[in-house]
Length: 276
Image (cartoon, rainbow, N blue to C red; front, side, top):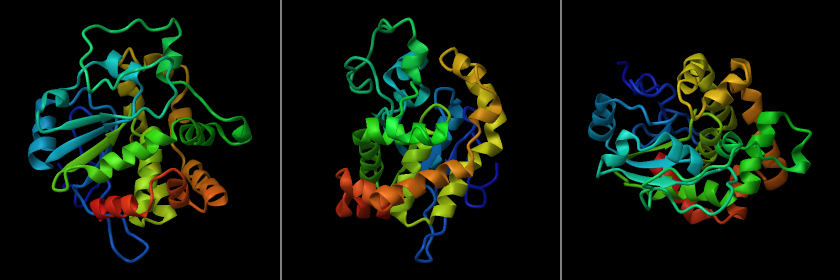
């Protein structure tokens, strides 16, 4: 395996899109630290060796899961769920039907009844009317900020408040859209310039063929993966560039949006310290 210190990709048996947020330049001439925060696709298929590396070598202590309740329950308990040292937190960025208890606070004995159109419940494409002129991916990302701002902030708080000596991983299904938005805010707080944030977001394109193939093997995601071609799943730099541009126009930038939603200077300083 290539060292994460010379290659930000973390090559695991059970994931396709895991990388370290360390090694990125900041506007004040510094760099983000390795081994603090990882971003990833779904962790359900980690091997025993993956778990040993993550928990033993990287000291993974916090998992921030951005999937919907339906995704979590349909996919079932992943191998990290049985590791006592690892804390799991769940903050869906998509609207959900009905009331759901935190699936990591209680155990579900049986899969609950899901609506006939459960695929739309798993991955609903919710946007706002004011953003209909924007490209689909931009609309979706702005939809997270409109419909679930409290969970965007909660995910960042979980990253800031985690075990200071250990690592955290933030993930969704593919590790590109929901994860990409939370990571964008985290890197902005750390002082990473826009173009580096855009480049980090676009890195998923390097593994998109393998990533889509992996998700097609899961009954939870197969339909969503198959009804669109790989090109439509591929992240493009201009998408994140446009989101950053709109945040600047509307809020003065990502930090302004965070300030407006209760993630102020003290919490931003804590997250910056975690990443730096």
